[in-house]
Structure formats: structure tokens, C-alpha cells
Length: 291
Image (cartoon, rainbow, N blue to C red):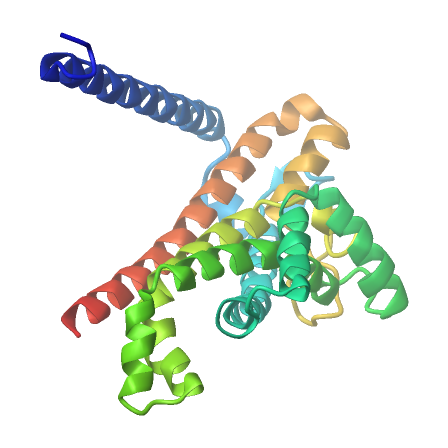
């Protein structure tokens, strides 16, 4: 009897495949846990209330990272607030209105290419356009706009995928009941795709919160006593602070615990923002399930 017709062989192959997938999952999870434990172990000497809530002192060798936390928060949230509506509107046009013409395909190709562009290219674009041409200077506004452009392809791709997962029958049923195209999009399609849209927003938020190259030319500075007092002021950020401590510190060995402590706070901050977004997504899913 051939292997293809023998159910025992099929079950054996299935069992082997599932076992290999579980093994790779465990290896991946183990690597992540090991990295986090190593980071936490090296960060413990620096972590304290003073480190979290005070500004840096003595050429970054003492004090804390509170201005960096505030700057990172405003950069990430500001970029998400701008990128989310633009990305959702673009995806709605591509999915519901664009059809399959050459213009739409060109837009999709451009978005796919932008998804693979290194972040330093976005930083140079922001330096040229927002900082120099628009005259915003090295500021929170320039950094937010640059990160929004960086996050836009992620939001568009994930939103378009979420919209495509909404059954076509739902659209046809809505139109058959007398709703117009706009009402169908806002009342049926977008609420059904909301969990997927929020998933894309989580990915974009995680990406922009940890960016260094995109803001080192547009928003971040070595030190500033201001903490987002104006959108035209430069800010400090956790990723750029790690870069400064690792490359430009007057005493790299003395600041090494601060580097790990800053990295640990960045991970916790991204985790916290993601948990808020996940909570919103879960509420949206439960609301859809009750309908």
C-alpha cells in the first residue's frame, strides 16, 4: 500500500510536523525569554524611582531618563494618531473604490516597497523635507511626521488585509437592504475589520516606539531640559538615549547599567502601549461578537 493511501503514515507525518512546529515555537520563546532575563539582570543595578522620574545629570552618568520617556511617548502616540486615519482611508480606497486598475496596482507596489525601506532613509527624508524645506527644524513635530510616514505602509497593508477578510456577502446584503456605499463601509465593513485594523496599529506603534535612525536627524537631541513643551522643540527619546550612552558617553563602563536600564524601560513602555491597544481590540471583538 502506498504511503499516500496509508492513514497511519499520514498521521505519523502530521505528528512529526506538529512536533517540529512546537519545537521551533519553544526555541523562539526561549530565546526571547533569555534576552529579556539578560536585559533585566543587567538593568537591576540602575532601576529605581530616581532613574525613572529624574532627568540625566553629570554628562549622562547619573540621574534618570524621565525626559526620554516623555519624548518617546509623544513621538509614538503622535505618529500613530497621524498614520492611523491616513492609512485606514488609503486602504478603504484601495479595497472598496480602487478596483484593479494600473493606478491602484502602482499604489500597492509603492506601499510594499516602502515597507522594506530602511528607517535611516525615512530619517534622511524627514531631515530634507520636514526639517529643512518645511522649516520645522529638529523638533517633536518633525519627528512625529517622519515616524508617521514610516508607519503608514504598515497600517495600509494590515488594514487592507483586514478589509479583504470581511465577507463579500455582507457588502451585498447591506446594499440589497438599501444602504449606500458609504453607509456600508462605515456601518458594516469598518466595524467588522476593526480588530484587524487595531492589530496593524499595534505593529506600527511597536515599530515607531523603538526607532532611532528615523528620529536622530529630525527630533532627538543629546540633552534638553524641556519635555515636549512645544511641538517645535527637540526632545529626548529612549532609543536615541541608548545610542548616545553606548557610543558617545564620557565613561561607557560607568553608564552600562544605565544603558540596560533604559532598554528595559523601553521594552516595558512598548509593552504597556501594546497592552492598551490589545485591550481596545478585545473590547471591539467582544462588541462584534454580541451583534
